Amino acid sequence: MSNIEERLSKVNANDRRVKRTKKLLRDSLFSLLQTKSINEITVTALTEIADINRATFYFYYTDIIDMLDQIQNEAYELFEDVLIGTEEHINSTESFAKYIENILLFCKANPSIARFVITREYTNNKVLKKIKKLLAKNVPVAMENYSQDDPRRFVLNFALNALTGTVVDWMDDGMIIAPDVMAEFIANMYISGSIKAKSKFESYTTEDDE
Image 1 (cartoon, one colour):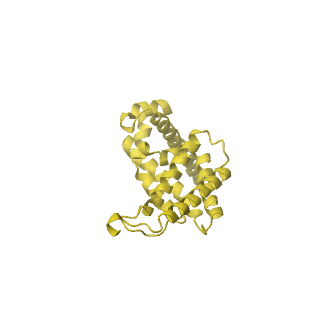
Image 2 (cartoon, one colour):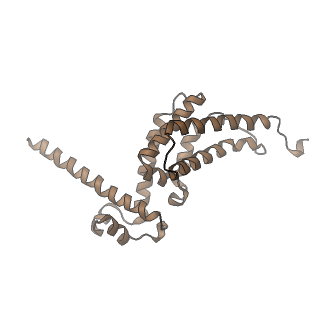
Image 3 (cartoon, helix red, strand yellow):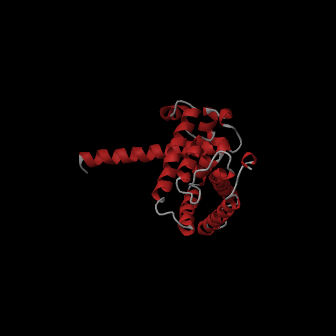
């Protein structure tokens, strides 16, 4: 083995070690968050569960909040790759269902990260708001602009909250229903419901206009 190959091998080994250590810390944090708020979690408790010494923790993070911020950024980047990578040609119920299916497949493969991203109390809505902005670009039949007194402007808000809430409930239920089946159901519910709601309020006017 040449000197270059040897150095590359050591770099790759170190990189794998770093990823493994951070994953242990991240999984331990997720475990603690099931029963404690972020403010109740200490470095000591976290490192004991992860079976990692405190010095190693402080090599990567300054404190628990810094760790949380880094995880949020990493989680967002993962979600961003999924959402942006599948956002083209969403112009039908079928393509919207496929878009949702990709989200569900990601959640099924990465349940801890997905739950961390879309569960409000973990992230104080920071990541969730950024995710919703990405989703908003691809939710069909919700792009129109409405006046402040028109209730139809909340169709998009309703859709995004319903989508994230349904995904959480689906995960809590053990993800028994296949992602493609669940995605088709969500897409059809949204499309049919939003069209009906918009049609109902097509001639909406305020009392002042009457």
